[in-house]
Length: 217
Length: 349
Image (cartoon, rainbow over the protein chains, first blue to last red):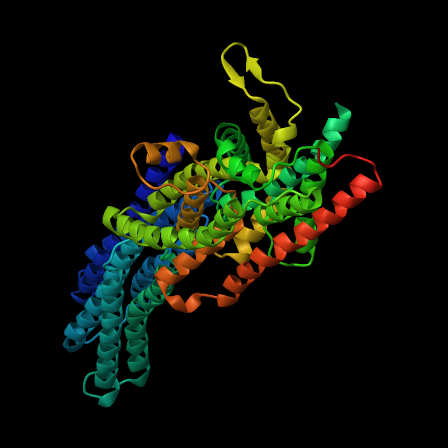
């Protein structure tokens, strides 16, 4: 019996660490984009490296949790939901890493006049991701707050969409900011990439809301 | 001795089928949803069924004895056989059936054959209990649902911790359920053999003694345990996965509610305590664990929202109350006639 409870505490700890890492990576992502826009390349590269390390750690933790849930026969009823939650929430950190890598490879040249809009988009996307992590924690901890977090995620995803369209309108609306069509397309692709962070968060929350209903007695 | 064993065989068969079917009421969801291993459930179930039968089986058997005391070995065999055959046959016809109701019908069949009067008071008590049993189980599970929901909300534990506690709770409540099942339903299995028990009273190693009836119940308990080990796994898988799709926490509530009902209708100690405090008691009667479970599941359904209730289920239980004892009574009468006139065995003295 004590073995059962020690395994329980161990796996609870693993999940906490995984969610903390995702939450940290989201903050790191926001700071990294800010560094990139401010031409602080060294700090940007350092932060990108840190997100990569966090991403690998999260992958390893997720594998360990899956292994423990199945071999130790824990939560047979909801382990499917739990694993799909962890895998989908993992997409958030994967996306953050991917966006930063693309920034590093493609080096998009955002005109300074768009910096505030880009940071608005990053902030909305990161808030959506943050509330998703909180909703995930709420699901695991059986919290009443879970629906509030899910609603806030939906709200910020919607906000991110609005900012995304605002930036695109500025880009394509006139040739004052950027004149070259190829460059417009390039920058617009990056705007979409940043916005994907909030879309991934929304996906997680949609699964979470179903899993929460399934968990009622 | 071998003749005695042959005569006891119908009771042992009833015990086996009880173990095969009713253990699933207790551990079905837990095993079906992989919260407990079948082996763990079978060992705990068997041990507690036997303890319940030997220690607390007398109360419900006493009431059954009042209905009719079968006083010849061949008669007891035939009555138990008629009950077992009714259960087997009605199960094959996919009709709702309970051993408790079949045994009562078979005893009344014997009463009619032997020309003995059926105690109307005892019969009324028993039949009333059948109706009360699922209703009470429903009331218990309805109340327990809100209590457990409140406790889970209040305790704020993680789903993994909740899962660990649920697992322990399912094992504990399963042990209690098995104890109650043994205490309440051993009367169905061995009740008709009490007055013709072939065993002497024994004292084991000078430590504790078992009466002749307790030895009979021990044998019946072992038959139930054999039923649990040999056949209940597939029933548990069916119960766990298809018929009643319950969450583990809901399964805990259902098992606790139905076990409480079985316990209330079996515990002589509780009756003694109640009467010593001038509180009203109730008759100790073997009741159907399956019907208690159905009542408890309906109770949870009502607590969640009344919309999920399948009223046909209630109708089917009601049909079982009437059809089962009538079928068992008629079969018992026919079999007793055959036993007496074809096999030349005295079926009453």
